[in-house]
Length: 178
View 1: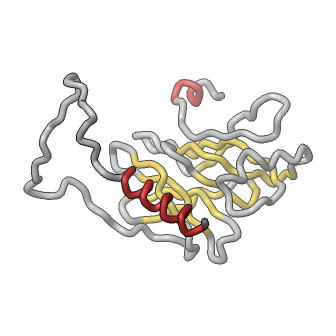
View 2: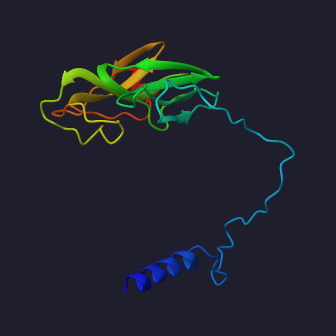
């Protein structure tokens, strides 16, 4: 019975990946043709790391600024990172062991938004929020953060909660000090 189930699953997966010619296309949707470009319009480069095995660029601005995170050696913690060209800058934390930048994370003028753990311990035990993005549960309070001109600052958390998550930058709110 197990062989039959596995065989049916395999056949379903293969047939599900095939092109269905009976499906009609909406004429309002362009079915443009693919053309070969004479030259590449992008460059692929390996970005420097701190030696950890999990590192990620999470956002790229129109001006080519890249933000994301790098794991520290040993992979127990990670830190928000900013690359300009192939130069790595770590953005630090708000006193805790971890910080990261999630998509889209970086504005065209170099303001980086993300999350960071603080030095304070989370007495409400709200690990569910930020630990999905961090390599380990540390028990520290996690808040949204904004990095600008070499300084990381916390964003205000949701009322009556310790944790916050800021994945984008709101220029109007930042200008108003929120």
